[in-house]
Image 1 (cartoon, rainbow, N blue to C red):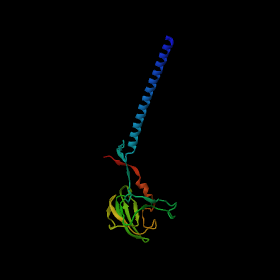
Image 2: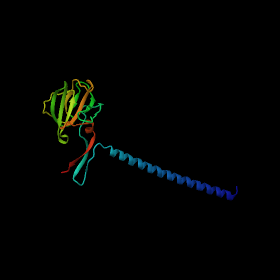
Image 3: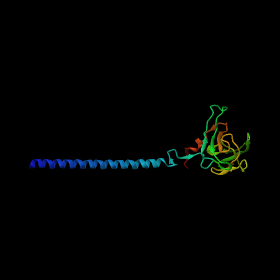
Image 4: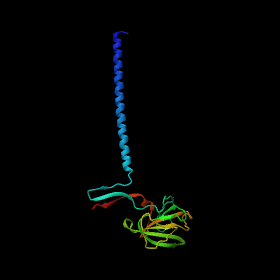
Length: 203
């Protein structure tokens, strides 16, 4: 090998080494960018997963996400969905059926007053008339019985009744929960379980 070829080989090796060095630098930069992107994505996911939030706007109000009601059974499992009739007088399923055992505790889905306790069409029924943001709504439970007097106040999550008796919804293995307004318009109870944004006046 003469001197000229030797110099050319040395030059080629130098060029190859510089190209490898440049590639390594580019890969390092790509890895840094990917790592930063993953961190940003993780932070965004954690932020959006927060169950509640609050902020104050220029109008002097604070907003937060809350559920208007809770399930009347602990560990509730829906076995019958709400199915609104097209017309008020037509058949439908005006509530949800929750899997339940006889004598299982029923808790108040929201604050209210026991409005009725007795038999309707041979079925044991208890109702709660709600107030506050749910004013005008009444929760109906069957089959259910209570030892509380009509007019007794209950708070959300308080045990006030028990599953007892027969029901034409799912024999004796469920609790039927319906919600109706003063105009006897029914609504899907599950819609009250989902979180909604509410605004509170900041004093």
